[in-house]
Image (cartoon, rainbow, N blue to C red; front, side):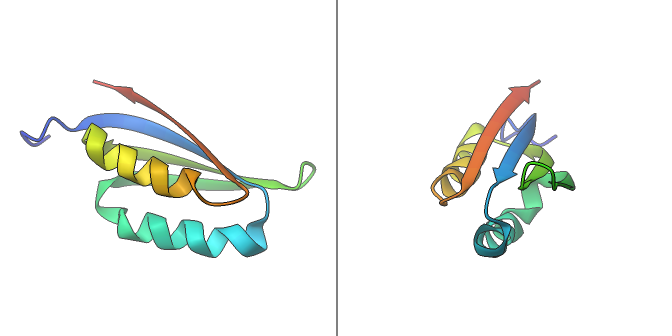
Length: 84
């Protein structure tokens, strides 16, 4: 960990309209790739949604920037939790 007061966190992202939202989500995640430690995406076909889980190591400012950009997308919901 660096001296920027980075913290470990988990983001949960729900995508409701994959065809429209996924390219924009992936673009944003690509721009924040340096803070993403791991990523898992699961299609939940029965509900018509896609769930993405991210493990991140970031400052609270970086995490806020990421969640803010994702949360402003239509058909995308995001929640985060930080520890350490």
